[in-house]
Amino acid sequence: MRLVVVGAAGRMGRMLIRAIDQAQGCRLVAAVERPGNAAIGSDAGVLAGLPTLGVAVTSDPAAAFAAADGVLDFTAPDATVAFAGLAADAGILHVVGTTGMEPAHLAKLEEAARRTPIIRSGNMSLGVNLLAALVRKVAATLGTDWDIEVVEMHHRMKVDAPSGTAVLLGEAAAEGRNVDLAKARVAGRDGITGAREAGTIGFAALRGGTVVGDHKVIFAGAGERLELAHVAEDRSLFAQGAVKAALWGKGRAPGLYSMADVLGLDAL
Ligand code: NAD
Image (cartoon, rainbow, N blue to C red):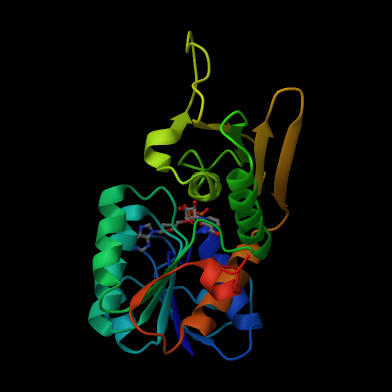
């Protein structure tokens, strides 16, 4: 499978180049960065700490997509929307790990998914997707007298909050409870907030150091508490998940897919 990495010079971009190099059944055919990025023209392998791959980083995604079967995209919401249009034009699979997407971005992805398969997840790891399935189950079992709070911590460079994974876990809890997360969500408490409203799903985001990604979903009842947690120790697991998603998505019909589809977790 011929794969393109967009955002190739980013933290995840470099991981994706390495993950493709290590995986069977796929190869890197192009690496894209935004115009003006210092990595343009350099070898993608060297950029990722590998031997030369003979693939120079380019700022022309349309040309790159024309000769590929799929694109791996961990960039930024506006860029991802633009790449979705180009991937749909080229008829290639789009794997999206970008987080911080607003409803308007997601609507554009849904539009593009009518023309080509898109696999999107705020977290590409097996552990977190399994955790989401457990959270859905627990939330469905416990009543609204159990308060749900999602706590996350990430490295100091992260630009969005709460994390895509925290939102994914909050969505799983909301699904379990059969409520709309947009209505139940409470994020960033500060000052005189008043007592906690029953049925809400709270989020708290911590930032610091080099933390790859810690998530905890707390179910707090009267006199007892249940905590489900995941710790990501290494970013490479997200990249490996994205490559796995690409290989799974090859030849699929247009549509919007999730990591739960890729990992076969829907039955849980
Ligand atoms: P980063 O800032 O290190 O990398 C982003 C890269 O995208 C940069 O190199 C930037 O130049 C590039 N980029 C931005 N706009 C572009 C454009 N129009 N064309 C080409 N390149 C463009 O960030 P990061 O830590 O690698 O994270 C990237 C995204 O992935 C974030 O949204 C992050 O939250 C998300 N992420 C998701 C998962 C997951 O499993 N889904 C895991 C880790 C990070």
